Length: 280
Image (cartoon, rainbow, N blue to C red; front, side, top):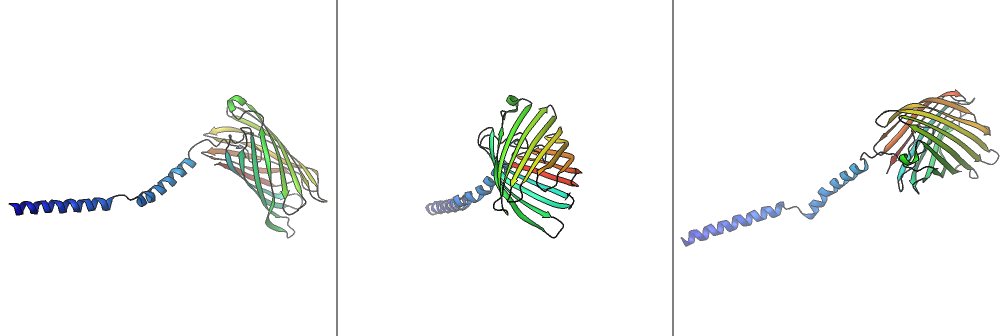
């Protein structure tokens, strides 16, 4: 009997020991926890970034016009423009230009934009290529509260910018806009009175850039309408032109965008443009 009991005790000890070894071998180590946690944290971060928060920060519902909205306090956004000017002037010049830069809120009503610009231009005489054109900054100040309830249907934004020309090292460019918008129900109307002055040795240029647009809300943050844009030469040898065309805009999560295809009234054949932003 004593030998039989000792054998059973030894067997139980061996089985328990083996079970403990198996449990320990299946235990989750800190290294394993880190390997599992990293992709989960990454996915959660992406989900937070793409969460469906309205991207009301600094958006415009028109491609050629500035909007009257600004980023919320401490908000940061990346804004991009892509535009074309096709068969412009007597020389039938073609141009594609890019604008890219971050915009950041300094106060609830004031924001700063830092931009870089590049362009491809073909003047039909053998000079064609892509090059950086200018860089600079502008400030945008909204006169009314950014809260649409407090602001009411009218809003006005003032914009002032300064750019350095890259190829003409002595060249500078000033820009200014007064943007006014009115919104009632589904209707939004905007006027943008812009101007630029470019100082280059022996080649100064001054332009007026009046623009206007109207759109109607037709779906979940989707608008359809029309816009008008022009560049009118006051001083210089460039070509004056004007376009008018349909426009569409949308907001999805942290993304907003607007697109138009301007049809030439005079001085140009077409001038399509896409403007979009992503709130960070």
